[in-house]
Length: 400
Image (cartoon, rainbow, N blue to C red):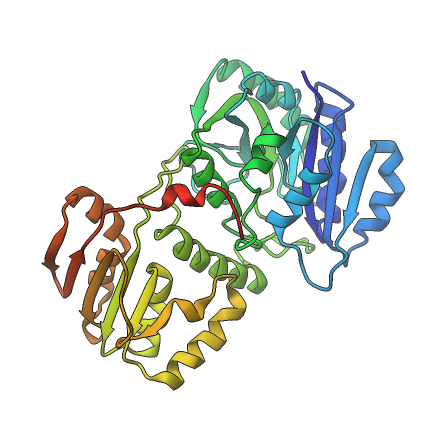
């Protein structure tokens, strides 16, 4: 197989890297793959450890030289840009590679294809069929309670290769590999998604760009699952359900950015194959608007026209703009402003409920199914459709 580069971001993930990197060197079919670690934050001795083992494991590391965080997407991109191989693999710090996983994924790689391995995970998330739920430890250390059962994992990988021989499905999740030039041509990860939703955004763009997403069921990793991000880590605790406040804030901001960009939430089937709805230019005209209604609705449209008042509008923009790379001021307008959206949805904000809000969430698919220009009324909503032009393919290349 060709030589590849493993791209691994780390944010205080030293304890995980100590299991991750040795697993790559031990279990890769090809022993001379490049490994690049981007150290986004280091309060746990990550750089000190990497420096001490860089020759032993033949790894390179890059340190964040800014005052803030790069975020996972930008960190991945820095690794990809610094790589010298034609192919890279996105890899999490809390993953351990199974034997020959690199080769078993590479077998399916070609131009306009992205190939991912199959995750084996402890029972922390629902089993939807895209991964294998089987526990080989909750922590990367071997000498702790619920620690890493490396030998048992290695044995199971050989059994799984027989059980799932020649099986592939369509979908994608980390770890995944593709050609570097094809990734860079689409602009890499979107910096709007600093530490969450960056993968869902990329997968949407890959699908729209005509890439085939393939999952190999002979290529395996053990994934401790979100331990380096959403779950509090660095503590030997059995409370795996406690998500960090920092992660929750980042996820909320990135989710709202995803709504703004795509007009929908993240959509995929059980095998992680993305479903991309059409992206329309939609304006909401909201009478009797409140601050809470503005906060709820703004991400779901291209522009929102309100009667809230200048002071409340300014307050919203001031509070929301630090969480977005999009110009919020250009999206939030008074109801008297000129309206040039292809589709306008007019309604009384005081009559908005959780039930009829679901209509707004499903609006792109409803409009697509209708396929008609003109006016219609549904529940509290008056809808004026002057154009059915869609813009989702303009989102393939990242230009932020």
